[in-house]
Length: 399
View (cartoon, helix red, strand yellow):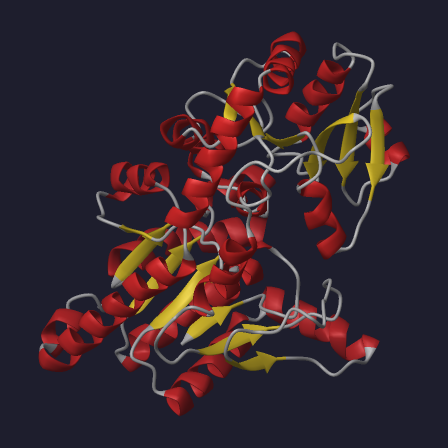
């Protein structure tokens, strides 16, 4: 049983990552999920399994009341998840963080019903809420994080750096469950670098702006574009307007802004000259930057065009890219250094091809079928142990 505050057809990082993984899961999956009519929805993005929603009527008054209840009355979420778990009778409850109230409630239900609990960490928890100054959520996190991590059957981390962080923080052993690429995307991916079809040499960034994760690096990218040859263009596919970007200090004579549907965006990623993945050097949580893995990179890896990674040297992004040679890394927080890295990738076809080969190889290492099978084996093993040796599970329960 998967519990998530957001799930398809809602669009977001957690729904995409869970869907990529669960569509390849060889066992039975049932989801219990939150829902908000305020969130972006894509009717073509369907859930990967049977799903029950805690869903308000589509009436504005009810929606506002629902949102307040979700944020303030975790007892409602807890009782609803418990009701679903009693009906479903799962072998394991897996819940993804972020999503504080659903995550905590899923753990409490697993404890109450004697079901093994998996904490699936897409991001760090306490460090992010402290950073963003979410007072109430921060208090909940401080109260629950250590308890959940030390009483879960498994804590599933997305990167080795995240595993190392939680080992140092709590002394716990965790399991690695990285972000995955669906098999249909791997089948559709090219086998080598594809030719760019853009008229200008296009340096492309796609995604949203996050003050704590990429804003300062996007400013440097805009500054770097001014040092590029005249036939280069910097293209941002983001939901921010030119005025909003300008107010945030992202200004360049080379900058063009567009917003495209998902399929058109994927086509553009396969025709741009360079795909840029920026990560904060100055504004973010030091720990989150070091441990995170961006969802957007999964699309970049199968586009057939070279990736340029602009990130701190000690981040998992930079470490993984250098290890697998799936991106050209620039780790100097300087517009001239970044411009030099872009020119190097533009001028060297051999380097570009090497980066694309590395990216495609990394994508295949992240094949959802491989990691969904590993998850299935964990669930099978843990559920069998729970039935044969209930005292092992009892030792993880709260007093």
